[in-house]
Amino acid sequence: MKDIGARIPDQTRIRQSFRRGLGSYHRAASVQAQIAARLAQLLAEAGGPRQIGSAVEFGCGTGHLTQQLAQRFDFGRLLLNDLVPEASAALSVLPRATRAQARFAAGPIETLSLPAQLDLVASASTVQWIADLPELLARLADHLAPGGWLLLSGFGRNQFHELAALGSAAAAPSYLDAADWPAMLPAGLEIHALEQTPQVLHFDGAMALLKHLRQTGVNGHAQQGWSRRRLRDFEDRYRARFGRAGRLPLTYDPVLLLARKTG
Ligand SMILES: C[S@@+](CC[C@H](N)C(=O)[O-])C[C@H]1O[C@@H](n2cnc3c(N)ncnc32)[C@H](O)[C@@H]1O
Picture 1 (spheres, protein in one colour):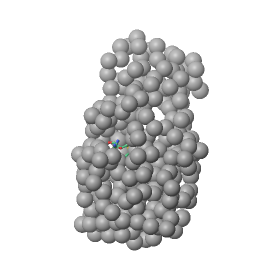
Picture 2 (cartoon, protein in one colour):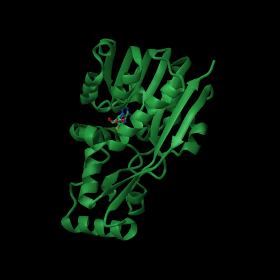
Picture 3 (cartoon, helix red, strand yellow):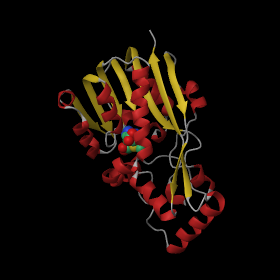
């Protein structure tokens, strides 16, 4: 299963995978949709103001989090970003008044030029793709205004543990448990919420499971180059080790974080 991923992220390949899956992502990514809803709820519960002056959302994809945030908050200025240029379509999920204040910039968030004095930096289900997370977090924290919010989600070390056990390399380079996050954050950020709640999806067979991975952009090549025999062997091993009531479980391990810049 070497084609499920590699430790060092090749951004061209990540971009290709997500670009290919973009049309099917929004509907197929049911876990990511729930994560986005919960993130927006966390910010509201912590007292995030209805009117947010200036915000950046990176890895916006098809706009799951963009939409959830826009339902609860108004933005003076909003910068959306994704590695995939076609994700600019996420602007269309915004209400017209917010859209007039919003823009999209394509490219890796690691090198994107950011506005200063941000009131919110948000991102759902993306930080697992960032190879040098401490460096990115330090830069994001530098661009937050005092009192500004950092709202993120990634995935823990149990993410897709079934695939890892069957011999695939981890799909993303930065799987972090909730317990790992305090040490990752630069000084001056105070944690307001930190949650890790695994969710398990069930599939009828290996083909459906691999299709799900492809549609959500995790692996653009998941179904290509798999001979019938290789697919059968994978399914047999998956069923023998993890099968439950005739179905194949796939574990998602979301980790959600809300932090605030002090001072
Ligand atoms: C799993 S999707 C999440 C999309 C959306 N935030 C959601 O919650 O549904 C991850 C997104 O991150 C983007 N991405 C991956 N690495 C990135 C990077 N270094 N900079 C910006 N976006 C990146 C991908 O193109 C993809 O759209």
